Image 1 (tube, rainbow, N blue to C red):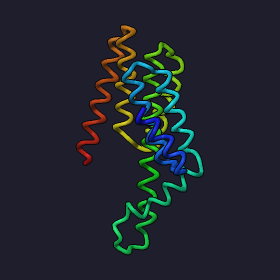
Image 2: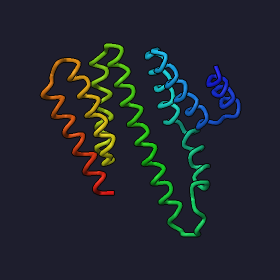
Image 3: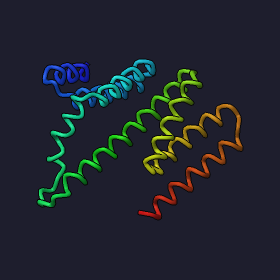
Length: 169
């Protein structure tokens, strides 16, 4: 109920970012309650809002809050690039969550489609942790179906990606 109130307040204030945050939180609550279809609906609503002009305007309005104020003329450009990258990673994570929820609902074909979309997005971003998470998700599905060897290969590849990324850092 609290998150719904937060959502309504964000609507009244025309705060697209607040609405997205409320929907994400509501999705998590529904997921924990086992109401996967409602969780998926909230995630789709948040993805739709993130694609709106009002959300883009909210993000652009808040970019100066992320800047250090150093006066560097390229700081705004770098800050926007980092923010855009973070938004794309967030989108990939939502798609992966939607995939996991569809799998929990027994809708494996839908799950595979969203996992593929998340995987493509993570690959285009070079986001190895996201890619590793998708491999782990697919390995869980493989284990559920008794495909032990495929699951093991995916888990080993996931481990290798995480090691690779850790070494890079």
